Image (cartoon, rainbow, N blue to C red; front, side, top):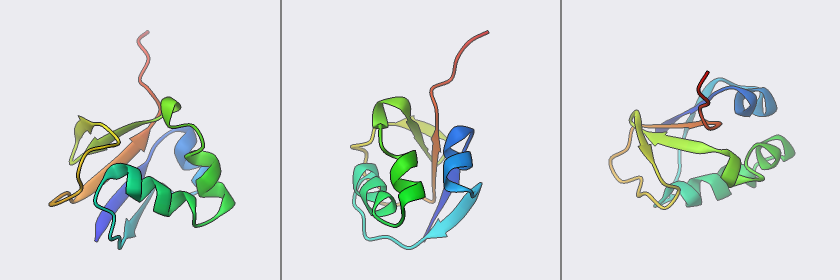
Length: 82
């Protein structure tokens, strides 16, 4: 089981701040594909990966990163300065 967290507009589109997911995905990209295939709201949230960032156990990562041993995956839009 992996805890999946959603922030900002990702959370708004999916309608959840977090959920526990049972997955056989080996990489973040495979997890995204599993989530996107669930329902339209997930597909909308993951439609453009260029507008998303991911962190694995609170460390920024790439979508090609492996999930082996990961406890938490967070999806969020790019951070902007201000």
